[in-house]
Amino acid sequence: MAATIAIVAAGVEHGIERACTWLMPTFLILLLLLAGHGLTLEGAGRAISFLFTPDWAALRQPQTYLAALGQALFSIGLGMGVVITYGAYVPQGERLPRAALFLVAGDTVVALLAGVMFFPAVFSHGIDPAHGPALAFAVLPEVFAAMPAGRWLAIALFLLLAIAALTSTVALLEVPVAWAMARRHWSRRRAALIVGSGALAAGAPVSLGNGVLAPAAGSAALLERVDHLASNILLPASAIAIALLVGWACRGGAARQAADLEGRLAGPEWRWGLRIALPLVIALVMARGLGW
Image (cartoon, rainbow, N blue to C red):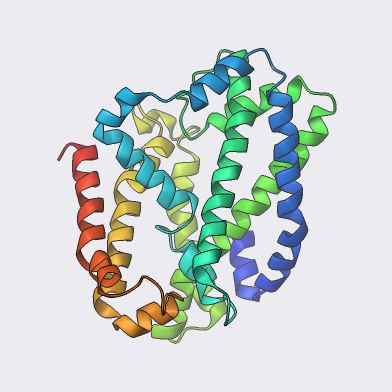
């Protein structure tokens, strides 16, 4: 986090962007290699069946829809404000609907690759598929231990994961940092230090939830509790707030122009969908999923 604060304060986002032009394709290639290796493992058949065989009974459980909603909002960064940050720096003339389509398609492809990479090892080594947010750290050591040059591949993957997490953290911090600069007239350095320090203080107990704070966390790890709060409550609530903000606080023409939806199917139906339909649907999914 300290490195993140320094990066934001120094304003070297362009350097990160240039690094991502080759780091993220490398990450994708490594995922493809690991997914191919996963298909050679003993548990590959059970993993593919687990991943792609529909469980129709799950569609009758309200928690399924809440979990899917939270995962979607987290994965594409909408509920956390990452997309808002990136959207603020999109060049004029960029077609946002097409960019959004590529974003969702790319996210889905990477998620499928990650599933094919992880779950064959999960079933091959007898690990519980419902291990929770820490599943990657339980599975990946087993995967790399059984691979040729696994140590070097592990170093490369975890380094790329750290860089991906770092760039996402920069985008997350940019939302409150930009607000503090615009409303409080703080310098970027001051805003980044204060916001980053607050995030560090709030996140430190979570990072220690499986360590020194584990006895105080109760039966469930602190990370899992925070993950449940974020995925099932905070992210959907954020999506409702964004929809209401765009639907009610922004002028219709300005909203459609900003979303690059002028001349498309973005008339009154789109606006009233943001104002009423979408918030109600998300609220209903939350209420049913949480048993309210």
